[in-house]
Length: 107
Image (cartoon, rainbow, N blue to C red; front, side, top):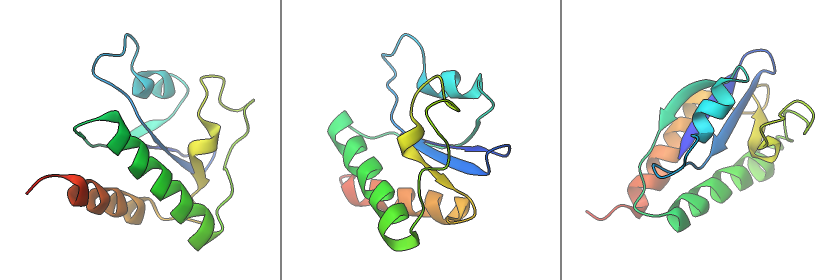
């Protein structure tokens, strides 16, 4: 799982990637001007999807944050996993991901 930011769009993006992927989603986004903020290792893709969906709901339901960019702005895909930094805080989002990942990890 990763968290990115883009200063041009004043946006952050959450997403899922895999060590087995031929081309990293992080690299694809970095090629388009996104900066890596954090990476989290989860034991499986289902857990990563749960965290991603939870954070997106949190952005939309608690902060009212719409998608920050359009499909045209992100030819690499993933615009629905973005939020405006005018609505959400990057550090707070990273802390939320930390907490959710920790809650899923075995003690």
